[in-house]
Length: 98
Image: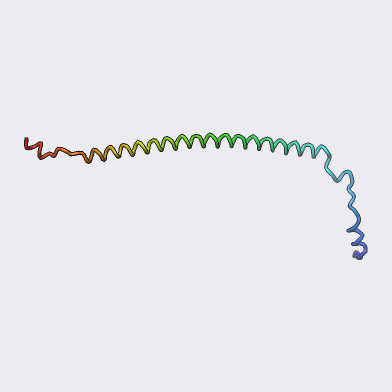
């Protein structure tokens, strides 16, 4: 059993590390080189994605313009068909009487 004075003493004493308990400098160097490499790859992928997004947005804008052009063509065609349907027609009965 620990007495209260032993517990208090262990709380106030700083923990001392020996040289073997910490990883070597080389470990940190390799670790940070790896992280730097990962960061560079992430930046490259982000740039690639941004470029692709711009391409897709441009393609969508072109497609939207084509759709609007097509819709206008359909509207004018529908208007033309309406005007044709309103035009007077020669009935078949008249043709048959001649």
